[in-house]
Amino acid sequence: MAKQVSVPEIMGRKGGRKISMLTAYDFALARLVDGSGVDMILVGDSLAMVGLGHKDSLGVGMDAMILLTGAVARAVERALVVGDMPFMSYQPSCELAVRSAGRFLAEAGARAVKVEGGARVLPQIKAILDADIPVMGHIGLTPQSLARMGGFKVQGKTADAAKVLVEEAQILAEAGCFSIVLEAMPPHVAEMVTGSVSVPTIGIGAGPGCDGQVLVTQDVLGLFDRFRPKFVKRYAEIGKDITAALSAFKAEVEDGSFPGEEHTYAMDEKELDKLKK
Image 1 (cartoon, rainbow, N blue to C red):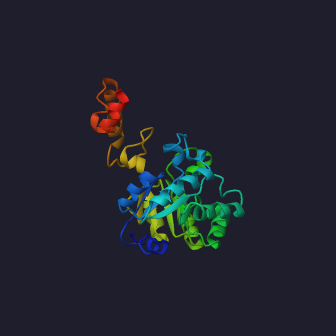
Image 2: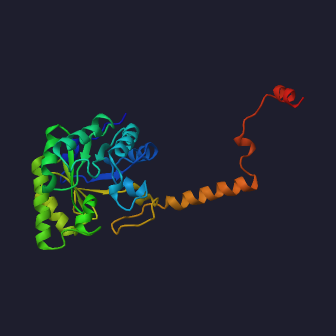
């Protein structure tokens, strides 16, 4: 079995070799993602959109996240598996936050959790950390705060807003987060944030100056076409290949060419003769 990536190893990559992270939500895809050699796999609440068809990430709860994080964790041999704390699994209270985070580790097999927000949820983050559960922070565009933000909007576009992001990142780093996701902000702002904290930053739509990058695997592979954020780079168009393959199956079923003899099971000739009599 390959050596597993650890939280201290990720922290030690600050300013060094870039960190890679992708998402996964099921056993089969998680095996492929882990086999690619990426450092971390996030079981993201983006599952709500790319897996369940919701318009945002608010439509997935703890039970679904625990179920699918478990599937991912059972598939992974190397990468650090991070469970994404879904909407209302930590906001109401510190007690609920610790209980929810603990489920990700104890029931699902994740080795860290991700929490959206800065000062607003600092007490919850500290409580989780006090329970010896590693926390990945997340600032900038935080999808669980879409109602307050007014939609999917780039953050840190003014000098004052950028300074707030720097302060938020410093708060999270000082609290003990082992890394921080920076989402949807101008590159020079992400560079400022990255330079202001002692833990790695993981960018998504935040430019190349972060200590690492994360994307949704379905976006990378061309498996999700409902919308495509500007920051996404397609590395394949597997969705088109899948549609072509399934269409070929349909055609062969209809014309009778599938299944062929090579796809069927033989019967002993003596038994076949008995059957025909």
